[in-house]
Length: 221
Image (cartoon, helix red, strand yellow):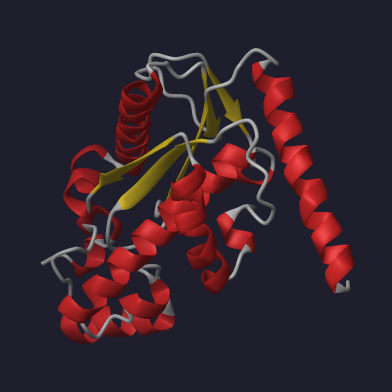
């Protein structure tokens, strides 16, 4: 694929993802919050969620499921999304909260917090309320807005994809900081996922403060 073909593809993807939101939420829905999370599977660190409300005339191609993008591309898109979004929010549930209530409930808490922050920002800036929330494969009854659960939403919805990028970059940056505080586990590379290097660190050093005890019961003394 040459440069021109790549640009055409990205432009087409942008229009397809915007069209999906219109079809799903209705043509009258202007304030759509896309919500996604990262960090459900790692052995350490928080689960992190983001909510993003983009303007209808958002016209910058390249946004996609964060897993399909390189770290460099995610980092480049991160400030663009924050600059152009009508509102956004970040929610986290740390390792202790995950151990207390389980990863699913902690994920829902993080997502709910992200939506609330985005809602507050939107109301403060525009006086408007969120009209519809698009969750990536999740239903959260506590969120007081009309909502739709979208399977593989980060590949279909522009705002969910944007949220996936904010969540991923936010959590990855945090885990790089944690690597400096808790060396020996390779957090700067694996971001807390259970890689060979990470398990080697667990074998030699045991658990550190940010490990999820409920995920690592055989290492808990």
